[in-house]
Length: 302
Image 1 (tube, one colour):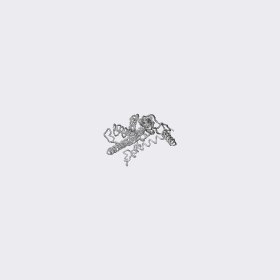
Image 2 (cartoon, rainbow, N blue to C red; image 1 turned 180 degrees about the horizontal axis):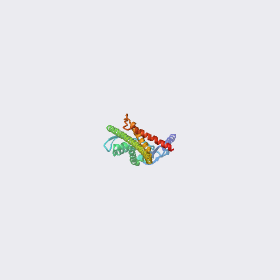
Image 3 (cartoon, helix red, strand yellow; image 1 turned 120 degrees about the vertical axis):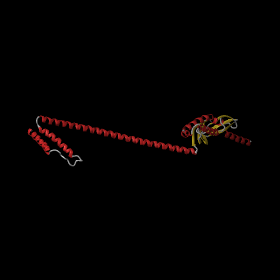
Image 4 (cartoon, rainbow, N blue to C red; image 1 turned 60 degrees about the vertical axis):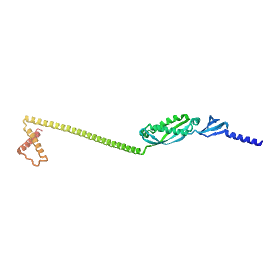
């Protein structure tokens, strides 16, 4: 009797142990009854009927990382590129992840590899290397849509490395160097051109200012000559009036002034050292005498 009670107690303990299921945070358990899915256990304490119900799979519901191994991809312009990637995904439906696909990780890895070959194979090498964000976004859209029936949400896909052949890398390096040299030559030529333009502009402004100065100088010279001509005309008029009145001394003064100016101009020339005067000295003296008489007359009148 005691043995029977002890067996019952042990059986009850085993049943309770099998009935209580504690699900950790970040996990979900799928439950089957006689091999058929019935429900999903969420994190926390759960009670099930043992033997009839059993846990078929424990699903990690946290975001996971899947590495895509390196593979060869032929671009549209027949360049062979070695590439790999990484996928970030999260299971949002434990039942679909368990029953809609046999091996989720294997299926996702092969799906990503085939789509990487498809997307990169439709692009040229230059497009591969310059449109990394566009490639990632395209892959994300395609893979996320394909894995949706599996209860998976793909959050991010990144192409890690794109390795062209060594000879292509060297060719690209030479091309890049040539492009940089070309841009440097263009900038240098543009700088020289701009320098010549600025120098020409400066010379142009200098010529304009010089012409303006010559114009102003010529204007003032003309004005001075005009005033001298007016003064000369006024002097001639005064002498003519004096001659009309019978004052011959005024005429002598006028002639003497012109005579002395001419002698002064001849004597001041650099190439003149000796001045010959083929005129009578008495003429100059007479002219000077006329000047003195004119001065006397002027003083006498005053």
